[in-house]
Length: 373
Image 1 (cartoon, rainbow, N blue to C red):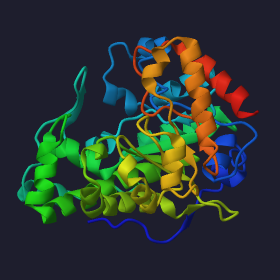
Image 2 (image 1 turned 135 degrees about the horizontal axis):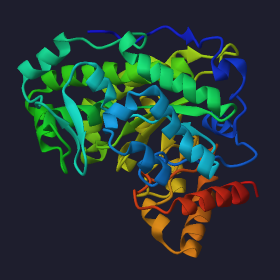
Image 3 (image 1 turned 180 degrees about the horizontal axis):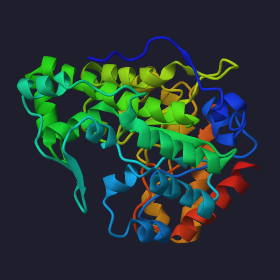
Image 4 (image 1 turned 60 degrees about the horizontal axis):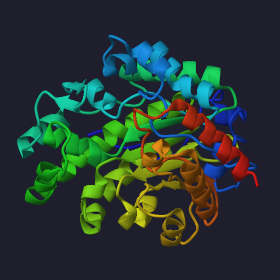
């Protein structure tokens, strides 16, 4: 099996962090624990179904087809930056793309999500998967990803691009279930029934998703985020024993990337429903912890000894509430975020598809104004 890189590696000379183009951006400063002049804001799933220009562009095209088209992926990534004035773009792709590029049969079905040709349920299934190996970040299979990142960075200028990848548990849960699941029973069953096979599966997922993240960062993304959408289904003990080592392995693919001044590419770790193990998520190798909408930011900061920059955590449900309700909630998030060394405003999960885009634009203005006070 491919091993995650252990030695630091310099970013390319033309990387936006190496040239200084994005090094002083509010988002990068905040991710590095330096409070910027304004509180930066971006939204998970800001590029997508809430935007009419996205829906028009996607007409007749499959999700994975669009993700692997550099021109389309770049254009979709840029759309919310133009419309909302957010402080970062996040590369438009999907967490199953590295699985697809590894030869796994998967499609995104409308209204369902990722559906796989076959589930990975046994030790033999895991061994067959592992035997196929994983792509390196420099492999030609990632060329569409690198080209999409380069096109996007060229348009963004001083606005940073965030690369992203799915955390190993979320990828493993999809593979074992074969499709989205409410409780991930099959995945948790394999975890306990055959912990050795589970560990092999998690290591493979860590490497394939780590390579995906590294490819984006080397191509020009100024930060990276690891998403663990389903880790909230786990107990803290199971997370520590069966998941955290693989998340650390995935993040290690990016931990060594440094700019000429010695500063590292900042890494964010976000999980849905993971308030019980925020310190363990930090210890996996993150510089910033993303917080969902279930706990207040000041409580999250307390659990991290007020020593870790935070990202979050406006409740997505409130995007449909009357403006005074949303505005007061956003101000409360800003107030609570001050307990951390630095704070990047985001949602506690993704933008709902039925969100009015004008509300997001107005919210960006509120954050910039109130966060500068």
